[in-house]
Length: 541
Ligand code: NG1
Image (cartoon, rainbow, N blue to C red; front, side, top):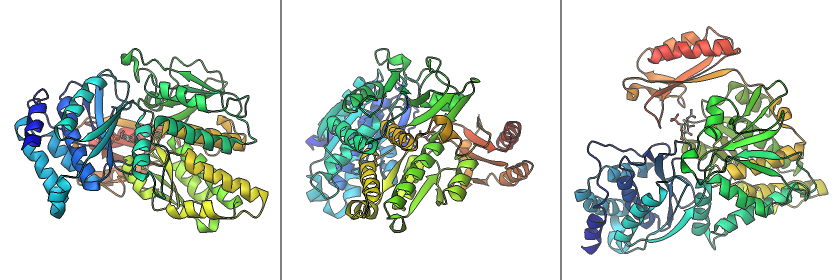
């Protein structure tokens, strides 16, 4: 039929390069922008159309390669509630991406037929709706052309939101799909995003002040212009709000993206971007290329660099939320918990369990795993150590927080603050701008400097190494990636090495985003952590 002919015709300029194999991984598809990504993006348009028909809802597509180099690009799909694509659909996306042009129309038809089962006839006619946006990469506009060619072929209604941060797109998808429902998330516009967060921020800051300014490294990515926009809606320091100093906001030269700056640089190099001229103790943070990750840091008087990563942001947020529910008198009705991955520092886990007395759940790497585990709590705080995370409030929590009657001014203030947290925190997905404002609010409430924050617990020295192996697929893990079940015998050797050190802990797992095995090790001294990492690396090599 016409529709399928159009699929075949429109994909002509985007053939699949000989011998390429694509996989929808932890963060969608990601590769060098010129390695056939146009073909992949075209097929993602078709997957999104089928997914939209299946869910009878608007689906999002974000074109970005996050913290990767400027010449890379990628694409991820956003499900109706603003969360990541349901896992069972990742393989559909993978299948279409690997289908050559002459078989693509048939493959798309099969996908629609397979996923719509009984309702086919009726649903085939169902209108599909897709919205999309991109980060600042130079390849973005060209890839959008390929995406539109697919959406036009299958007659999908779409809106191009131009440049957005990844979390902004997630926010808008959720707003569209909850419009006029009891779960309405907000105005489905970029302005609605700023207004919702600014209003909540003002409520939370009432009567408080933030000490000094915060310097934000925007990785020369889309976070720069978007944070500048956000600032227009926020009260300044003088007005009882916040002074934000932006650095690395060059989006004119796309090649500067993530170059010697950004959250990934700071986290992996354990140092401030060279472009930063912050003084001792100054509050600094870095976003990544699509502004869905954030880490804080400062340099002390003796020029030592201190990182406050995702583990720290999680504990900071959890302390505040637990305090507020206690003051509001609703703590017995709400189960608060923290979700981490194996990469969380052992000291952070111990602090949460022993000092905060909150439960910790551990999941495999990848935000979707953490997100699902967090949804099992009333207030679920989840962060990957690299700074990607957010807080989820269950329907029960929202009901309790919104409907509780305060019995004192103190309780009223705590309830108002919790209500504002529900709006300030982007529950759809980890969001650097939202997480930053939340961290700033908590620091203001506690009158904490970054040094005070760091002193809540002292990280165990640790080391992360990347090991190139012949075939990483032989490394199979269990127990939330903390143990190797294959190759046989490897785990026993790792255990043996761990036992040689005080507080020794180590694990090895295949990366989901790179062709390598990652080894993580921690111990009570730096030398020992490094030694242990080296020994475990030898085991997997
Ligand atoms: P892999 O490559 O699977 O380790 C990395 C990060 C994850 C996550 C994904 C997606 C580490 C150790 N791993 O995963 O936390 O963010 O990329 O971007 O940082």
